[in-house]
Amino acid sequence: MKNNIKFLCGLLLLSGGFVLSSCRHMEMSNDQWREIVQYNYPVDSLDTYHTWNLLQDKALTIRVKIADPYIKTVQVLTGNPYLTDGVEILAERPCQTGQVVNPTFKVPTVAPTLYVAAVNDQGRYYVVPVNGATDVTIGGSKVINDGTLHRPIYQTFTYLFEEDYPLPGDFDFNDMVLRISQHAVNDSVLAVKVTLAAIGSTKQLAAAIRLPQIKFEDVKGVSIEEGTRFDQGYSTDRYFITNDVATNAFDGSTVINLFEDAHWCVNSKESMGQVVRMRYNTYKFDVVDEAARVPVISRTYRVHMKSKINAYYLSLADIDPFLITSANSGMCVEVHTYKHKYDEVVWHYTNGPGEQDDRVPWALMVPDATFHYPVEGITLGMYRDGQISGAYSRYNHSFGQWGRNRNNSTDWWLYENATKAQVY
Image (cartoon, rainbow, N blue to C red; front, side, top):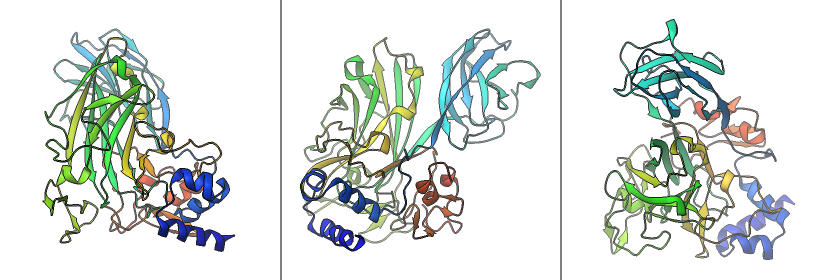
């Protein structure tokens, strides 16, 4: 059977004429399609129940008993900001002294050491360790409120995309890299910050974010803090996304249109009337006409909502960032994380999973604001025929072992290859 699959794989990759629907419904059976994809995936013997999720749920009861009449919010933190830089805010709720809040939030499968803090209107922090408790009081002798404060940042996820869906790719997961955070400005305004960190593709790539919890009819408008779009002044008609900053998804939720052309965002130069398409920030050195290191760029979108939605209760884990590109046949496809893999948002291109799910992702979310993604041509992690290799291949902490068993190596993203030469 493997020889047949090799032949089909070669046909699939060389012809360029197969698309998701035709492969699955005309040329091949569902089982054949799954076997083709899994044969080319860097991990064999995949866990058939894998959800490719690196998050878990947490909940706390927090009681504020600080003798400061100007307390404004309570935050759940990943560390003590008086000791550590880069501490993240996992949850935030309006709160005053004497009140109790009950935040629910997501933490990585490798849970950080949690702290809670009451913050006053001048930005002063009163910090208390959680120490494994579920009911925590901010007050008394445990409070830490002096020293040099390292201002916490909001929880940030890194999203890694492969461009070739539904065809097998090289699975270095750097064709597009986005880093995204969000926070409530107030009850009715949600701020979503997006950073375009890398482009490891020479195809035109667009991107958008669906906010499944926010119906488009409940949005007053979307503004950009920086005043301009990622691709402000884009000289070609938009095709993948509309001219509107925000639009209505097929399911009625809100879509933020990020950009039509990732390459143009970081380098608006053209050559012979065409956008220059090099790989950006996926090599550690510049290559003339092929690769360059460029500054990352960010935009912060403010979603102004009607009063029926409270921004403080919206979770970063629920957002749906996706890449949009054209398949070899010219058909437009969206590339989502596994959770939303078959969710059509602005383009129709698949009949849904049914029994056809190949169980592998073309996009991954890593709960790390500074995750070191693979350099060009290095797989995120490989485990085939008993051999482990790739950018994240440390034994018992490897991407490949996690792929084979969702309960193993759940900390793989913290253990890059020891040489560090394979990550950016």
